[in-house]
Length: 245
Image 1 (cartoon, rainbow, N blue to C red):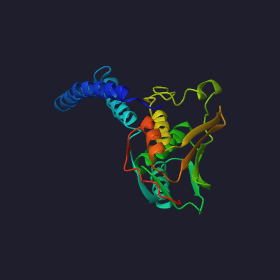
Image 2 (cartoon, helix red, strand yellow; image 1 turned 90 degrees about the vertical axis):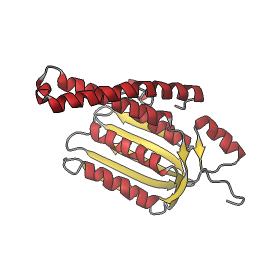
Image 3 (cartoon, rainbow, N blue to C red; image 1 turned 120 degrees about the vertical axis):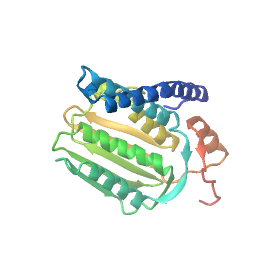
Image 4 (cartoon, rainbow, N blue to C red; image 1 turned 120 degrees about the horizontal axis):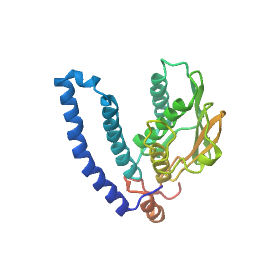
């Protein structure tokens, strides 16, 4: 889902107006805790702190959702990028019984894209897989070359998604997790679409889910593609096309 400029402006204003008082509320609650530690034993105090922290996370996600289509392109080696993501996620589940493995096609070399935002997408999908998996479940992430694209798959054998929910999981504020904001997959979809790629999901209850991303290895900013990108989001530092490539 891509936002137009008016929608982005409204979200920015609302987020700004909410963040200031929320920061004051949270700071005040922390001050009360530090001066009166017994406050932690008050009825509903823990729930109050959780609600305020959730609102802070929601505002952060809204900001990321609002700017998901603003890309800063660079060309980078895909393998070190892949290894960093794999090691980062593996470290996060090291103290669990989850089994994780990754595999990358040896023919994959370089890719042009927003490195930071692509990292955000892959880690989000992996964390979702960890949340959905059973305590001793299996998670995998694979990448293979397909002509001028890379196909990345994140797979788990967890609880899966019912057929009636599949069509709406990329819609903003759609979540089936207890503490989710419902923006993670919307942000991921916006980032991938802004790269000219696609993200799809196959899932079945009690069998698990497979998220499949098709991502072009090159980004090309000529007159037509830049016009197209203006509908998908703000394109920053997009490389120009060269004749013969």
